[in-house]
Length: 315
Ligand SMILES: *[C@@H]1O[C@H](CO)[C@@H](O)[C@H](O)[C@H]1NC(C)=O
Ligand SMILES: *[C@@H]1O[C@H](CO)[C@@H](O)[C@H](O)[C@H]1NC(C)=O
Ligand SMILES: *[C@@H]1O[C@H](CO)[C@@H](O)[C@H](O)[C@H]1NC(C)=O
Ligand SMILES: *[C@@H]1O[C@H](CO)[C@@H](O)[C@H](O)[C@H]1NC(C)=O
Ligand SMILES: *[C@@H]1O[C@H](CO)[C@@H](O)[C@H](O)[C@H]1NC(C)=O
Ligand SMILES: *[C@@H]1O[C@H](CO)[C@@H](O)[C@H](O)[C@H]1NC(C)=O
Image (cartoon, rainbow, N blue to C red; front, side, top):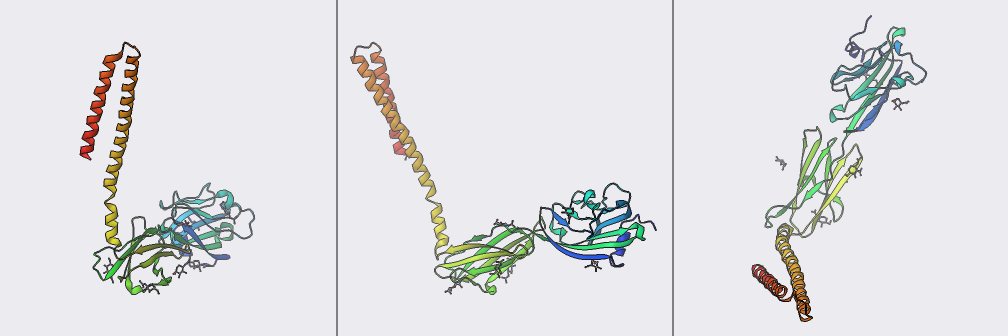
């Protein structure tokens, strides 16, 4: 029996019993790497010329990587795994057929089967390990937006957004006053899959308008045992308040500019005055550079004064 086609072994997956069968679960984070364990318990030395080693998945049915007797390196059939799945020959010689999978994506959420057949035992399946990989990605810190809409509304609408997580999130809205969970009937969460295959979630909460409605939005990642919780606080008029605080910023900036320009002018005027005094003193002490310098000083002082007046009028 010549076993050249890797696909042939897929048929054997559900068939023959292996000497050693194991089941494992492992968790991987999107973008990082993970070790899928497949270790022959009696760790002695293995003659790789006597073994067929397969790593494959059933859904979709594909061979991740395989090693044939007499080869010097593992092979790949599926280019989705070509640069991401790695066996170590050194470890394999110790009966450790573990696979390292790099750059995990949500599509790797499946069961990987490690199959080891021994040639000298008429291709007996000596080891089978089923490793289920659970993929997780950290949700972004939720952003809770304050109620939008006119303040005459009977209701307040809060919105909470979080992105790039895996698996699907649980969303909770919490009453911050007594830490109770708010009624699900008040909420509407939309979960969508983005271009990275990760989940984005938008949740809205509608509650009766009241003074001091304090709520929290909580995004739970069950796999990471993680709750990301962010508060939102509001008062009845906070919607309009935001707009008001937006506006004074500009006039203030202008004031600062005028203030700085005036400061510079003051210094310039002071320098001009001092220079004027200096030259006048030199003239009276009999220096000959006198008259021309003094009138130049007065002229520059006049120009500066004019400039200052002009600026004053403008502001
Ligand atoms: C491993 O998976 C195969 C194919 O799904 C199944 O037949 C076998 O019983 C599983 N083995 C264990 C130990 O779970
Ligand atoms: C198996 O080999 C891999 C890769 O060399 C290594 O990271 C892992 O620790 C080994 N596992 C055991 C149980 O020796
Ligand atoms: C997930 O993100 C949160 C907030 O950015 C951080 O506090 C936490 O440590 C992260 N967890 C993991 C497992 O990366
Ligand atoms: C939050 O809890 C307080 C105290 O139990 C209650 O008075 C308030 O109505 C609750 N707020 C909402 C939005 O349910
Ligand atoms: C929830 O939000 C979605 C999207 O905004 C909308 O299509 C749907 O009608 C809403 N459902 C309820 C019960 O409000
Ligand atoms: C996250 O919050 C929910 C709702 O309050 C709770 O049921 C769950 O146990 C929390 N999970 C963790 C890991 O704290």
